[in-house]
Amino acid sequence: MTTLIIEDETDFAQIVAMNLNRAGFTTIVVRLGEAGIEAARNRHPDIILLDMMLPDLSGTTVVRRLKSDPVTSAIPIIMATACGEEVDRIVGFELGVDDYIVKPFAMRELVLRVNAVLRRNTTTAPTSKDDPSYTVGTLFIDGPAHRVFVGGIEIELTALEYRLLAAMVLNRGRVLTRELLLERVWGIQADIETRTVDTMTKRLRDKLGQMGRHVQTVRGVGYRFADLPAKA
Image 1 (cartoon, rainbow, N blue to C red):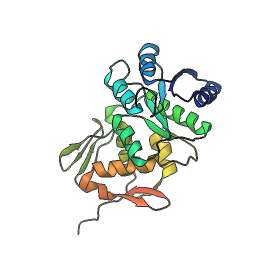
Image 2 (image 1 turned 135 degrees about the horizontal axis):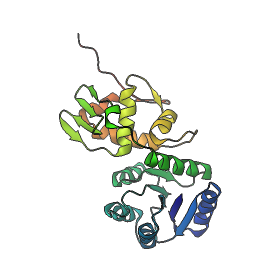
Image 3 (image 1 turned 180 degrees about the horizontal axis):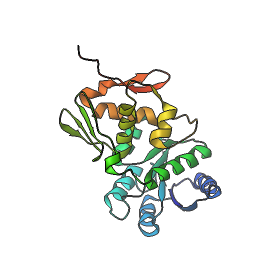
């Protein structure tokens, strides 16, 4: 597996490359956004680790160009950056990045996240007949088509948002811890401190509109999709 590292801090990039090499990855390191886009097109890496703040292009510009190019659009991207505000995470997920990790971070966490993203992108998806559909109030999840509707209007969700919603609805009424969601949705089996689950859940809640109120925060624990009250 090959990881393309687009990072302008040379010492940091070398440390990341060394740890990924130890984990069995081949690494390519470039320090400019244009060079990263060219390397992605020519070298076809399995995954890209991208800094948001580069000398020539912003990380968001790099993501847009990679995702709009048929040659590189399917390559998973992890943003690794010092920009840890919620708005930065939301923008990253809106652009289609697969994960978002904030500096400074433990190298073990990085390796886990890289492996988790690769597993999600290489695991064979279940056949359509094995994907169940759900109706909860005005929410309808069309499992075979991986489409979501609220009040008959389709809601555009990313693959991760769909997986998060499906996990919650499948277990509606039950509290799912952040750790459990990391394992089931992100594929990370580790005790990692992260706000990624919180950011994604907030974004999902906003997209669901009137049904978003059923995505409830259980303070200090995690989240649950509240069941609708039984009709009298």
